[in-house]
Length: 307
Length: 141
Image (cartoon, rainbow over all chains, first blue to last red; front, side, top):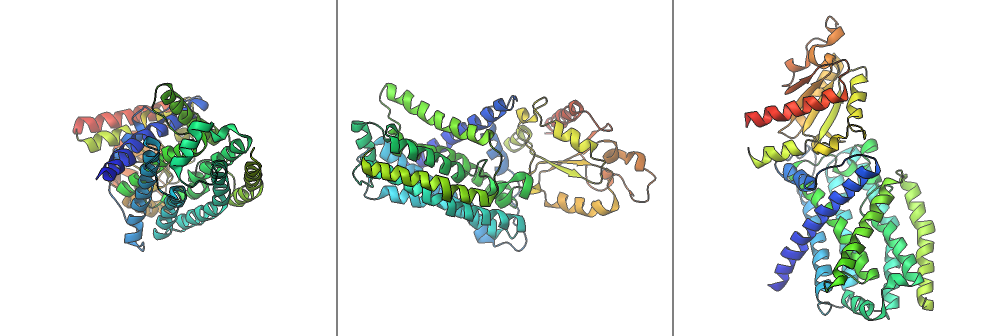
């Protein structure tokens, strides 16, 4: 029963609220970088309410179950990840063996749901977008897993998120060490690709393939996808905060530090997004399998040396 | 006013459709997105796909080739969807009035909610037209 409460209250409501605010921060900072005024605070929420009121169209030739089911799979997996992260963050004893691996696996499901929805919509542009998303998943997963390996090595090969947090609370954050800092840089680049933001937004390049995987979505399924993306904008930086920066502590001044850590990560992601052009998919794969993987391997070797 | 309409008026995503215009109106529409005018203040975004759009901005004189495609796009747009005719050509065919290729004006083909005159209309005029459209819908509800 208590887990259901966690699932609804923390996994959905709190994550959705923070995600919508983060999405507004992202849009506002983008506007300010471009010398514009930007949207009002409630804009992301209004967008979703509007999309819920629109007509839902299923294209002819599309697989209806996969087309309408894909957004729900994505949203449910994001809720599951954020529930596990919140539970670990609130009470570090509230953990089970291997939940780090569960989180890593379940964080891939939003991408898979986007691939599924793209292929199910029987639109050639959506298929191009989905195949690009698939290549992107293949390219960023290897460096991301290597980067997550660094905190595991530092904490004496623990794969519980809770014990990573307790280790950091007593011995200082992992991002403070050389290998941890390198791994954090790699992980931020991978998060940029996981969120499908510029420079890695090939799956939904609006000017090139007209929205890509989301081209055939309208109404409620599109609202679910938008909400999923906004929630991911909270969940992924929160995951990095937990495994590299000691999580979000609620006692006294640490709460302020936690909020600053989160806002700082979102600001870094936004600035990367605003100062780069979109790269081609082959450039992205080469980038992730070349320099980024080498950086991640160096970080892992340094972690073994204890640096 | 219902919540549905209220939310629609606060975040109208526009889709931009040219039915054989000379591209002047299209450039003026894109000007509305630039930092000087910034229509994202009102929650408007240029949508890439017709399935995401709430407002169809039509420019051009509706020639025979583009009319069938325009009808298909209007049918594909999820309702409620509004149509705005931008520029002289979309309103009355302008200088192509007597042309063999432009049989009827836009509002004889699909229902039009707002007209923005000009050849091409200034970005200020387009924003004023959008405000008038929103006021009209508020008055109706």
